[in-house]
Image (tube, rainbow over all chains, first blue to last red; front, side, top):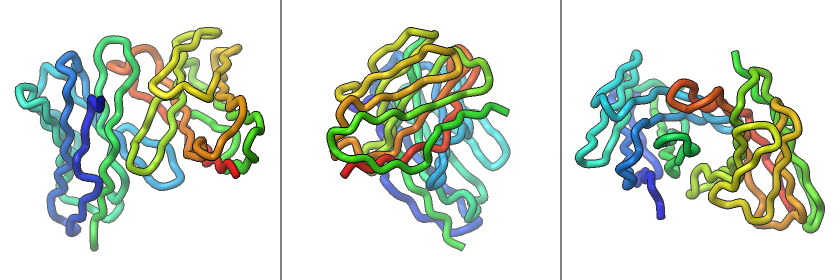
Length: 111
Length: 114
């Protein structure tokens, strides 16, 4: 049973516009969420995180929103740039268990 | 800056061979992990270790084993490689709980089993 779901395998966005990547989770015990970005032939790199006690966290062009009642989080990238083209993984954790990852969303930013 | 080094970027092995994937981290991290990445399946956890000589099964441990004799090194072993183990293998490490220290990944080993 998939605990972290990224239902959109791919997303295309025009350069300069907003990219919104979505993630749903089923385990109500998750209390910390992370987004990782992965370029081809490289390992994933940490992008941004949010604790379940918050509903928003911002870091430059990247903002993560958390809606606990809906068990939903989203990553907003504004403005989108061609260098943002990558696969984005949503991940969640509770306690000392390992991270649980979603299947990823491939973002293509078109110049 | 944390460095997680995987010994091979690309590996081609034959069915039935015993395969060793090596991972070394240079930041004294307690926790180390092995994932595999497959198209449409995302990142799936194979094994992890929270201390030297300690190992725990992840979500897909079948066909794999691991070894952690030293803190900085975590090896993934395919006892008898099969074609369905063709994949991108990613090693990661973290200092303590992920709340304080996100996972740092190596660049991956793309393994092809023929």
